[in-house]
Image (tube, rainbow, N blue to C red; front, top):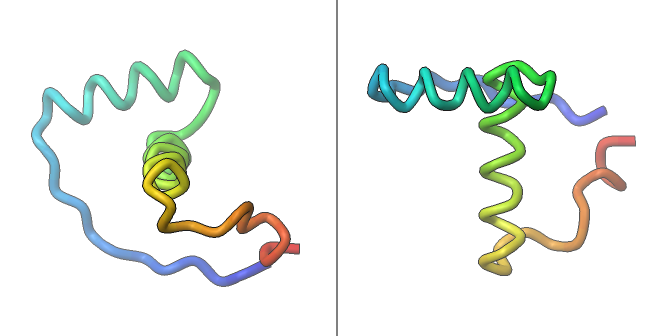
Amino acid sequence: MAEKKRFLLRIDQQIYDALEKWADDELRSVNAQIEIIIKKGLKDSGRLKNSSRKNEK
């Protein structure tokens, strides 16, 4: 598994609360939900090659 980079993210409380609810609805942590949103955005914009799951194994 590839090592994950850590970084600090500062966001508005209202945005965090919405992310937390969304993550809870999908049985994920807020961190995992943010990662999924970012990956989807990168794929949709063509900035991420077909799945990084191959690289994680």
